[in-house]
Length: 93
View 1 (cartoon, rainbow, N blue to C red):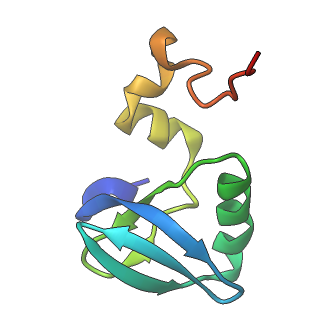
View 2 (tube, one colour):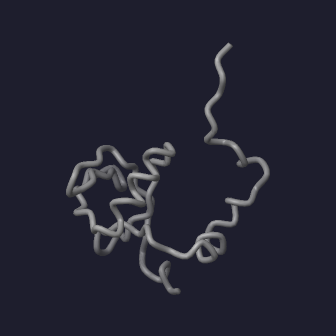
């Protein structure tokens, strides 16, 4: 799958609506219309406190539906022991 053959960048999810999502990309806020296939993935990401999302910088579209093997190849840092559990909540005592 040649998902990452295009120019892409990471965007910060600022707000999720019914039909679109507001994402900050390179310091600019852009509103991206949600495809039906992306809505469920995006809501799951936000529920899990994942607010960085890959965005195609040419078309201003989200890149959400990719094979896990492609992601692991492009982002090998996912396997780093130092990052395991980094997004877990910290118990306050």
